[in-house]
Image (tube, rainbow, N blue to C red; front, side):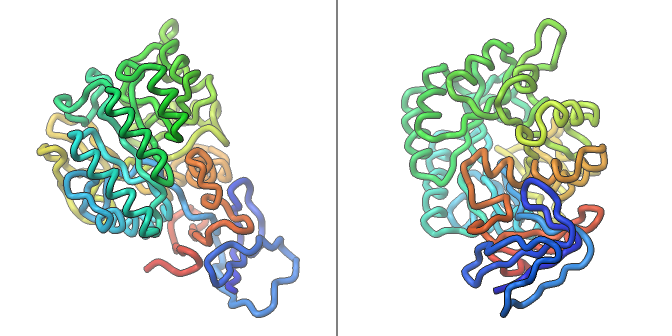
Length: 379
């Protein structure tokens, strides 16, 4: 049994001063021990000192890392490589994400995800398919030639994947999928997320009523909030759908981040990295569907300046939100318990008996200091 101690412990809901966390030899949380309570006998203490001990962070939008992108080269080994890269960056559970691609590549990635699940790849929590069923007018960095409406064959493929994977998130535009298709996907277990859309609020609300449960990178690749045209932003802020958001200081203005936090936190807003292959590397450029993406000054852009993913880690996103004045516990929940709950991963994103012993240690400034998977330190 290991016993982790730190100045503060975040359990997924609140901060505890001077608490301790015990982890079993099997890599599960045994208990959270309040300050002043007796520690279990026979434990090896890991004293982390100042800072915050928190659950391993959970990232539901990860396009790549360690020089690899989810796409034509993807197999279970590549998914393991991407998961390992993000574990080193603090995200101990991720949804590797395929950006709009050809049908055969989608099938290949789903097969790789099934194999990764069978192999119990550390950190692999399922897949996120972002497209191809989007609005071409809100394509962002997606290849418009590959965007198309959902067919019944697509629906059958996605429904089967949702039943086979630990979790499946599907980003689609209401213009490209019918409410009946959304309902069928949801019934199969997929987390349907609305994004890359110019839809009206009424369309978004109809999709929510059909079973859509989330919004992909709120404010980005969608219409703005207008006085008589609230669009997806308005539907997201006032509805029950959870919203992912990129808090990198580039994608979303601080005022909009604060609006989202005040409307949706602590339980309806979650942070995503939208990471690309450059994550965890010093690479300055990569390619996406044959197009070069450049990495400069914290931005990833196509040649025309279009943002193409983000260059941020979840600890940095948490720190950014806290720096704007968002409650520290709420900011931490946005990167741990809230996304874990959305995908039904009840043993992740929290420090509670029986949960995975995946932990991160953050400094007082919320900088990453250490990571453990199942109680084992990640190098």
